[in-house]
Length: 154
Image (cartoon, rainbow, N blue to C red; front, side, top):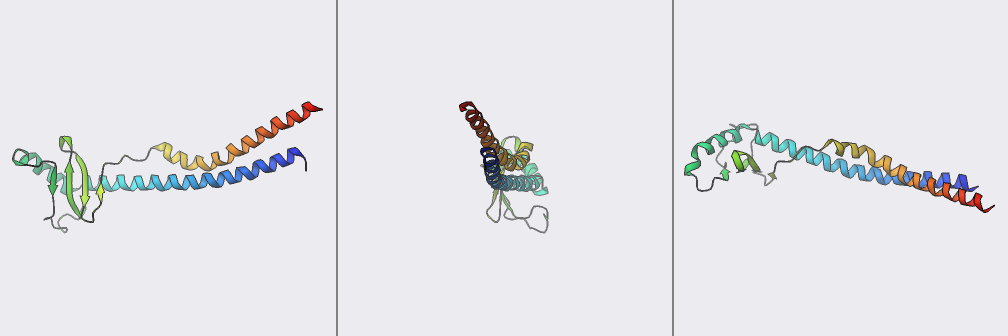
């Protein structure tokens, strides 16, 4: 086997290993993006519910009489009356009557979470490609330089 063929095989082997590592990084990125998407959708669903709208209206009317205007406790609500957002325990309000967070009866707290950016989805596709081409290209470049140096000795 000559240097050219050995370099080509080494580049392919390391490229394949890099693609596998890139696939693992892609999987981790996909998990994060999907979790962020679920948190965003759940918060938006809860924040847009009838319960939150009604409590916002009550808060606007009762604000002068409240001692703690940042929290609304909803423990007395009947789940049958509010089928979209059953399980809301506490709504934490921010500025201008915006929802800062929502605590559910099962102990989870949801904050406003942005939707995943488009580049996050692009990274999911790019990680395996970069994982292949970076080591493959580096070995090919080293082989090319090495072949040039070997020719220069003769």
